[in-house]
Length: 137
Image 1: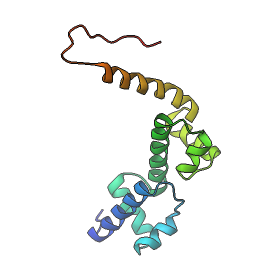
Image 2 (image 1 turned 135 degrees about the vertical axis):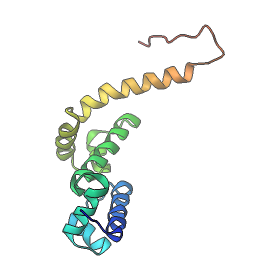
Image 3 (image 1 turned 120 degrees about the horizontal axis):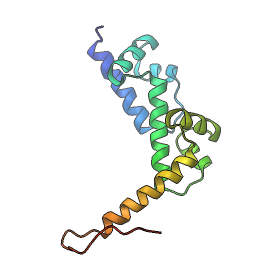
């Protein structure tokens, strides 16, 4: 299949917009209008560069942003959902579909591991031969 460079550039623009403005509720017709093309052409070019349809890519970007917020903040699930452009119900459904876990389960498993790793890295000194990882309780 041949995809024109102009169409690839438009699809790349949409990809960048979805990554930067992940919290906005774009529809495919909105995106088509933004770059001045048609739905079929944009979908084809977008799938060519990302390997995914636009809506699936948008969903994955939002879930990755939600994962970051789950680890980096103590915000409620509702607040995180709002910050990534979803309501709580949608976030939970999409999150579970992509990770097989609810946001709460994922946070509990990953926030502790991330905190422990940061602690171990911050307490490590290559010049201290007596250092060894300590169990944190």
